[in-house]
Image 1 (cartoon, rainbow, N blue to C red):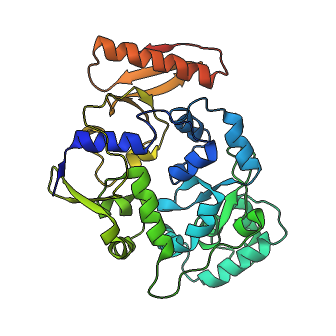
Image 2 (image 1 turned 180 degrees about the vertical axis):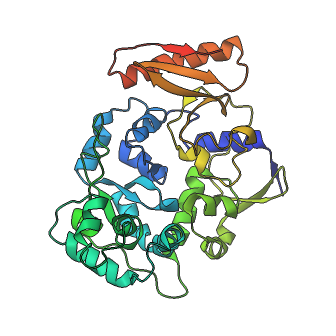
Length: 361
């Protein structure tokens, strides 16, 4: 079995994540290819797509949200993701059990004495008028029936009833709280029903799509990205279609046979990643792209700078200026490259008015 070292895995990840070369894909195709973008911070996906696409125009993503071609919803790992509408409809039922389990893990005491099926039905009844609501508004609407429970709105939105966050939430340069609508009402179609016993077409589709965007990877990586424990069976059902490798630690990696695996010596450009980017969070073992010492940066919401394909700095914005804080010493050439890319990012974030970049020492 061929061994792929961390550098080989790094270059494969960059290629699959559209970070080795900016792609000329339409925005919707990019969102589909990436299996969505983590998006609890509403403006972050715009930077994620700018770093991946040539001539990315933020209005294109806003138009897709307004046109209901992409939606913001809780899905993988019970976090808010920006996904193609078709993917949400196809995958939502496959996530139902995980979403409920994770909500119960957080709110078990608060939900003591609450029948979840009854709560879901009551939530759907409240939302049937088509009026988007915040989580607190949902909780207040159910207070007569469950007066002592304060988390009912979040439980409904994040687990029990498929919902979306409606615009203007998530539009370019807008702000405001999240308001939720029924997914089926928003898209005019019910989610795909669960598969019959013994079949898992949604799980199989997710495994294939994950490998196209993140592979080569371990089964544990697939689980870490999705939050789903039942995908090994989906992997097993298509194992004869896959190729296998091992990493430097001897773990089995699975992959699609024709997916790109660039030469490890391929140059990697500087890239600025948004907070919670799945290029980091999409793996159980993230050593292919970030040192263990900095593993928690993206979980904490820090934005990362890739230098030679690996996390080498964090970045933020101060009065329009991109401020870079290195995590290790950068060569003069790397500082120059970071500065050039940072100025381009500053121009993007400032609508063409470059405010510059500062690289701390």
